[in-house]
Length: 288
Image (cartoon, rainbow, N blue to C red; front, side):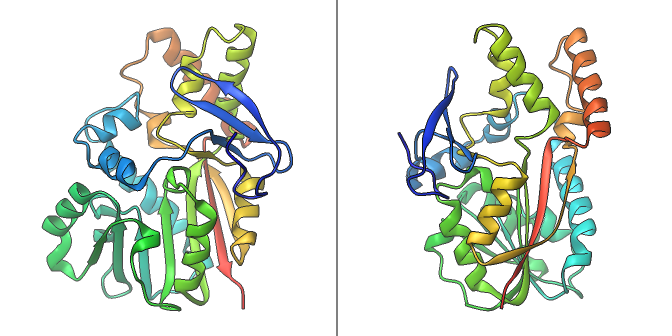
C-alpha cells in the first residue's frame, strides 16, 4: 500500500474500492488518498486534454469555468483580511482568469500551471496585461526565495502527487509573514458522508455518488484536521478558515434526474445548517 505523506509511512488501510480508484485512509492521522501516484508525464497529458473539465466534473455545464472563477474571487475577498497586498502566485492558474480579475495596481501577478494548453490560453488572454505565467510542475520550476506575499491554490491540493513537498516549497518562496490560501473539497462535508452512507447500506453496490467525490482525478482527500496538519508540517500557522459551497454543487444539476436534484438540494440545505459544506478554505501564515 502507498504510505501516508504526513506520517510516512503511517498506518494505511483500505477505505473504499471504487470502480476507478482504490482509496486508502491513514489510521494514525485520518488522511485519505488514492493508492497510486501519477507520473509527471501522466499529469501533463491529463490536464492538457481538451475535455479535462468534462472529466473533472461529472455534472459539467457550459460556462462552468467562469462560475468557478467567480467562486474563487469571492473566496479571495474573504481571505484578504489575512494577507497584505503585493506579489501573488496562483498555483494551478488554468487560463489565468482569476489573476486577470485582480487589480494590477494592488497585485504583481504570477500564475503557474502544468498544462501547456492552459498556459497558452492564459498568455493569449492576459499575457499583455502584466501577468507572468510559468508552465510546468511546480517543484521543477525555479522561483525566487522569500519573494511572494500570497500564494493561492484553488482546488489544486487534492491533485498533487506530493503535497508536503509542494507546501514546503511554497513556504520557501513566500516572504516572512506571507500567506498561503488553499481551497479543496471537504471530505468532512455532509454530501460526502451521505454518499458514503449510501455506499455502505447498499453493500457497496451504489458507488456512483461516492465516485463523484472520490474521483480518479484526485489523489488526496482533506478535512480540516488533515489540511491543518499539512500546513503546520510545512512551516505555517493556520491564520483562518471556513467552509463554503462550490458552484458545481449549487447549480450544476442539469444531468441529474428530478428526484436526484431534490435529494441533492435538500442535502445542500442541511449542510449549510450543519456547517459541513463541500469546500474547505484554510489560510496559513509563514512562521518566522
